[in-house]
Length: 451
Image (cartoon, rainbow, N blue to C red):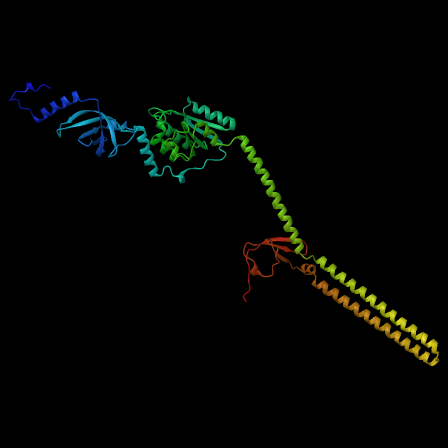
């Protein structure tokens, strides 16, 4: 500006002078790039952003209006190093010149990377990445939902893998834009719609590879919160294996690629057949082992149980033994007396005294009668003893006791014979042996008499 137009007597108002200065600055300092550090940052309710950008030698007041703030992918913080594009103007009310910022980016780090790190930290602090919130994927989903572009390679990769692994699986596709303005809102709306319809068991959300800008829709907060509130398990499959998105951290499972997501969502039919065969074999072995254990347990119970028929057989065998011994004893006694008789007879014949013989005959007759009487009495006593033993045996027989209405109670768990109600608790399983058959019971109540 040529100041010669002002004469010595020209008097300017403050507003006029300030307006002239603003014109000079705006005309000569537009589309500037300025680098410095942020301080005195302020975000008022108007939506504008005010701060000072400074370096070691100077500082410059700066303002970013609401329209530019809305286009920012990250949020400014005090101390952040910035590269700013803007123009110089004057704020009339304070008489200060200021930098009107139209675009800012972090110095040394890209704006998208900064926005990614800021949002990641914010959502992590809110607990959106917590393992406790993640939902386990169903083992055998009947219907799979896919939120992606219908024209991209990702959907074809997913469908090809699913067809190869499980051809009869039903897939429901929700087509959305996966990059560009409004793509994040479409993805979030698709996730919400899938949850409202509740027709799928698991969701695959993603797209194929690309630059950070191409993948940015999956780094938007609106998508992250839609994934977090989803009651359907979500598999995030964004980009390639080296690509990480905010959606990956919030999702219930992260797949390195869309094809990998299709492989993770369900096992192949061949794998399932192998698993079923293996489980069937294990089940068969388990059943065989259980039955073998029961056979051994039954054999042990049979050995521990005293059969009344066997006990009675032992007693009858003992009676036969005693009867045999009695017959042997009687035969020996008779034989001995017969031998003695023969000796006496020989002695009589040798001496031949008639009176002595008659006397001896009488004596012999008496002795024989006495012997027969003794034998008969002994036999009768043995018969009475035998009958008494048989009667006692009959009374003591467990079968006889069972026939009178008694029962033998035993524990179903270990086979112990129970004699005291104190050995039982409510709910125990009992086996009652009756005169005919058994009864299996559950203890409802025990009555224990006081001591």
